[in-house]
Image (tube, rainbow, N blue to C red):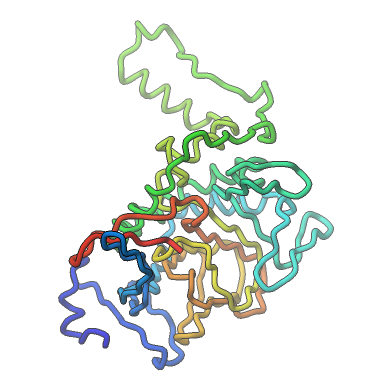
Amino acid sequence: MPPSWQQINLIPGREKRKLRFLTPDMGSDEIEPNIVYWDWTEREYLYIDGDQVERRRKKVMQIKFLLLPKSLPEAAYNQLLAALQSADWDDCQRKASGQKRGLKLRYGQFRPGTKLTVGFFPLNPVYVKGNGWTNIRSVPTMEQPQLMSALRPTLQFMDDKIQEELPEYYDFASTMALHTWRYDGEKEDNYDRVPRLPESLKTTWSPSRPMSEMSDEEIEREYAKYRLTAIPDPVAVVQNLDTMGCVYTLFGTVFSTVELNQTIVFKAHEDGNNVSGTLVGITALGSFVGGRLVFPRYGYSAELGPRDLLICDNNHELHGNLGPVVGERFSVVAFLHKSVCKRTYTDDRSDGEATAETV
């Protein structure tokens, strides 16, 4: 049975944080902002006792939703929206769940159903049909590095909010992210497809006078001014998605992969490929009406507006959108893809040491 409200109030976390447990019979309701929704779920693990190895299941508490309205910084939102509006949405052959892939129309517009997968999305050992690639970075990542530059502030903000609002979960997610370390001898990606800057746009910092004659404050001020106008090198952007240099996560966050969607109405589906127990970060951008996100098992839904952030469990939970969508609606879904993770992690339990698979 779920804990009583008295027991819920004793759960460690942010002061006066309201926690709501879910049951399937709670009925249709709006996801309330700034409330952590939980439910009990079963998680599978491998129990090891000497030579005995068996697959077991245990009940754990799983976070389902946390809605943070208008929390995405305006500067990060505007930067990402401009990049999404200028992106090449014909750069990915993957279709959105439950519908045909969007087709390119006149004047650069697309029908609903267009999506891009960016970040680490390994395809080894199978070659992508038609291009012979085996890169661990997705095709749009290699060919549209401006998207990755624009995504960085938003992803880092999502990571910061998860750490701030859900510190205990963040410890777990960070542990799982560390299991995305690079394998020995893994082949480096081919960066020939990354567009280069024209020579005329490449800039290097040149002080106004000899540095020996400048104070530290003058040097810092001039260099800061240069950085405001400097254009990042696309190859460097793609090569340095992982700030640690040894794992497959994006910009020091707990995410490895991002789905970018343009005016999509998803049918009810499960994602299924996220690391077990991890959550996704979702935000919406653009000028639109519609696209309510629904979790039918609970009867809960959220009308995500621009700059809203929803942290939720999409992995084995049915979810979909209500249409129609009027206007241009972009959505960003950041998650930890199990294809970049080492398959096991150590779970210290009170009845002995066990190893759980991220299935």
